[in-house]
Length: 315
Image (cartoon, rainbow, N blue to C red):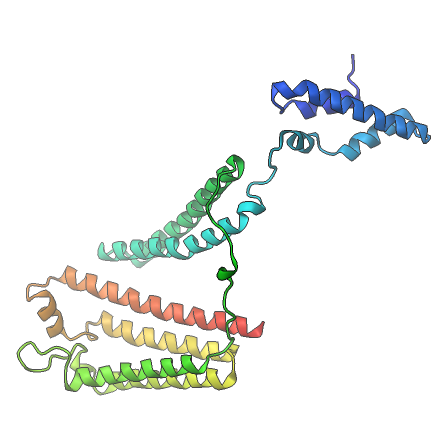
């Protein structure tokens, strides 16, 4: 015997329900569908057309069954979505970068070829992003279905302070003061010395950098000061200022990393004094790699921050 559309619809609806509720749902659907069909017939529709129209209006039987069972049809609903999204963004900003840096340092210490280092770093970066996104989503999907409380509550104290698109007076003064202290530290290191192991100044920066390489560094410091003043008087970061900031970051990294790679940035006597005269090549290489990655990371973040502020200024 061929089942009617109504019988097929009801069977598709109750098949995913708990056994104890199947009979009640079947009876409710049979009665409501029959009433709706009869109402349409009284208005002049044929039975077949009326039945098809009623079932179409009820929609997907799977969705109807989820309503009867009070079962979510979304992976992460509005109750947990914002917490999931904020946590995911935070973890993606920290964990993949940390993993990539760790792989690059490890492969560099192992003296792997540059192509292998890049390949390993990209692979680990992509894998880390996938794993972080997957496991954070799985945890929140479980929370969604169990109804567990994350303990996260919002209140008005969490409202962010309005951010200026430019640089306030306090910020520009702090920036100029920092650059002045940096320039003063370079001069003090050269002529007075922060280290005096034998009563004589021991410069941390390689004395051979004077005068030309240090002069280039002073020019970059002066350019950074001019950039800060320009942002202040412009009232906001612009694309042009972001480009200048990126160029200065690239020039700084190029100067510092090239000197570091040649072993000309830090005074060799300082390394020997700090780590002992028995410092082997591996220890020096490790120190140089850590210093180099720190320089690149700081400069990269400074450039990205400039572009982020420029985008905010446009809005």
